[in-house]
Length: 329
Image (cartoon, rainbow, N blue to C red; front, side, top):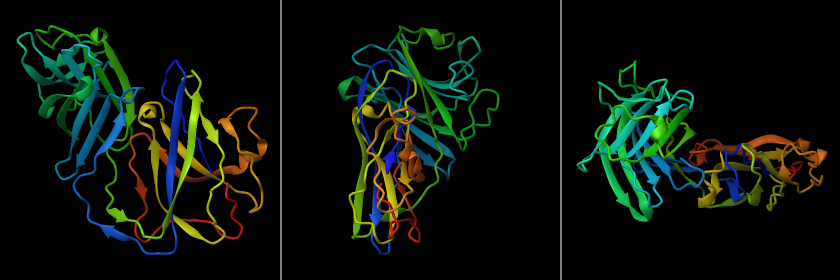
């Protein structure tokens, strides 16, 4: 199996990255379903450092999303912070919830939008609800607010629906007398992240007692200074899979300082004879140096994208793996 952790967020320096997908393989057994303990919390980094982070929970009954955004200020002074939604990741023509501190020191939140010139205007309808803000350790400002899937403000507000949402964020200085009229170009820092806000709710599943975990790890990867890198790593599963087993769960394992760099990963099986040996290649997936023999490693066993939680198969299912003709690479 090999993960190909790719495409990576844009950056212009070398990073040492450690990422993995953990695959839980069950021996013949039954799974039991446990009741969900409260709403599931999803998370995604907002910048390359992984220090600015967005957390969210989805309330399908009230058709709303509650956001908690941690902005890493690194000791800088910021009078306004914004998290918004954009159709294509642009800062123009976007829908923003802006936290701001006025010249009197009063903190508030406004529902705003930007025009094609990047000018911020306050929306006549205010739909950034249940606002709160706090300063936490390490120079991080945390703000929370709730947004409905559909605010019925078709002209200005973003419709939260299935599929990819482009989250756009900004931080700027002051002092401010008003938010209306601010320009995107005045932001001291800004960025964009793609996430899937709405995810299917699944019951929590208790794994059987007899289960083995395998870390498909690509560690100490020096990512080149390119906008996108596809990295391949071939490894041999250190388990006896001469009889059939089932994969019942997989999830990502990413070091804290690599979270903003890794966009998605896949684990592939090398479909070859049981006794065939595979070159333990580590390097760019499309390099001329990649051994041709590894081209058979293309059957997807597990996949992960930024912001995704652990994937657990339902009680009655699992992905078959192993058998007398199974290749362990």
